[in-house]
Image (cartoon, rainbow, N blue to C red; front, side):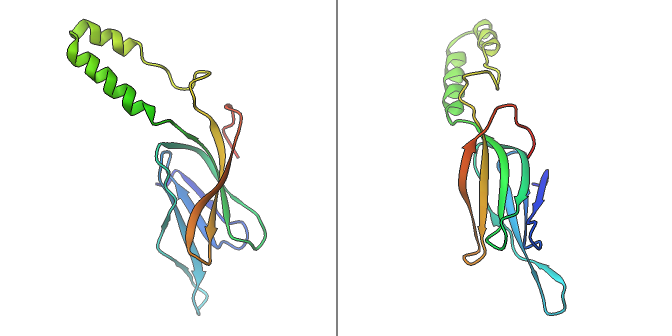
Length: 145
């Protein structure tokens, strides 16, 4: 991962790194006795079947660090649809296979079941754990936070 990078705005206690799809890692930052910054092992906050559009750190005072992510979680029915199409193409000849390819649904059409969400991930410093706290639906045209 590494397409998106966000830090905790309150003192740089943590950094979240996310890739465009699925992977999210949170690094806890500490200072040693000499004042040097040390980076702890990454904590995983992965979500399967998720596309990330933007990532920012949220200022919430001295509470646990929170990161906001604008993302779309695409549904699991894609695997079933692809398996059904493969079964059809195995049974039919080459001409029918070309027809099935032309019938593919484009992503992003109205009513296709994809909702863009603003999701909040909280790093619990006491438990050293990252969790997705809550998510709210946003307009489909949102692209930045």
